[in-house]
Image 1 (cartoon, rainbow, N blue to C red):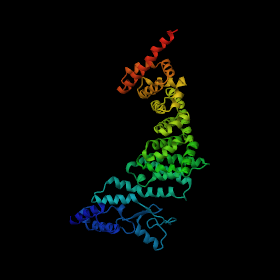
Image 2: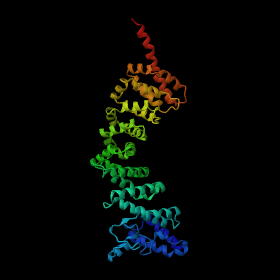
Image 3: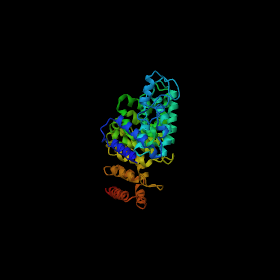
Image 4: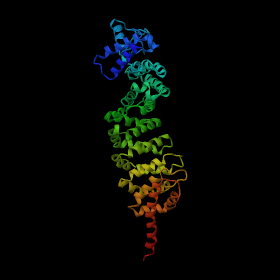
Length: 440
């Protein structure tokens, strides 16, 4: 047990950076202690943790283009001796580059730190490591054809379905930023069908990895050529591509890590036109468009641009047609309109268009649910406080009945308080109108 205690001390000191010896010496020392305590530990080094050349525990694992992993010092000696083949497969090495296998090294460190009580789940995962490292290398290689890269992306998509993404090799090997690079730095003015097909599948993969990835990778869109590629892909892409890009816009607009990119996107007239055009679609793309526009409307700097590009009219049309096309995001649309009404020109658009007021009144009370009721009441309050014409239009559209029904429903106390405020405001208008009519 003495060796085990010494091993635990060395690994503890290694983690806490107490020992001032060079890392390589320390790793070799740990390996030496592992071998000395083999009989006591009742567990040999897992075969996957051994270099095929030296048969020792890996200290600096690297992967070759053949997919085989070796200890760096061992494979360097092999190559220095004039050998140009893979020691295990004996394949000729067309590419002599070595990719550090960080995942394998991490698993070995964990195995050492836990005194060899290695988790069986990781043993299963390690079988994927070499394969995934090679996929990344091939995807990043300029020598790979577009068709080959498309096949790789398909394989990565399948892996993303099978592996637990939160801790998967795909995340640890930084596939997300690599996919973004391949999507947005390769699109040009003359995108072929194959280019778009690759972009569609790569975007699908990227969105699988996005929830577990570092969002700062999206800051690459601050570069003008990359942003141009993004916009070009939005313009030329099919419905799926547009839907995927909408999700990226939504994430960018909702994160502090990508605030500058969000502001840049908010200034893009071309992007906002594309997003608003999606609202007329009857597919899932319209819902993706609503979510992206809603996220963008949270930024004050973007609201005026959205209003200028006709966002209010498009959102109203979406609400009016929500039942006909079974659209589920009418509450999100009305919440977006509420945010846009802080812009004076947005109020003018609604007041001058009776159908806009009718749409707001329609959302005050719905039998199915009360989602959107508060935003509808708030929007009408913002309009009616400053405009007699808006009050008259709302009353004509049946808002009084809608408000009374809302007050009898199970909506929140805050919504009811706002409804009473609006009802009081409108009642004063209703009382004044007969007086004005009776005066000579």
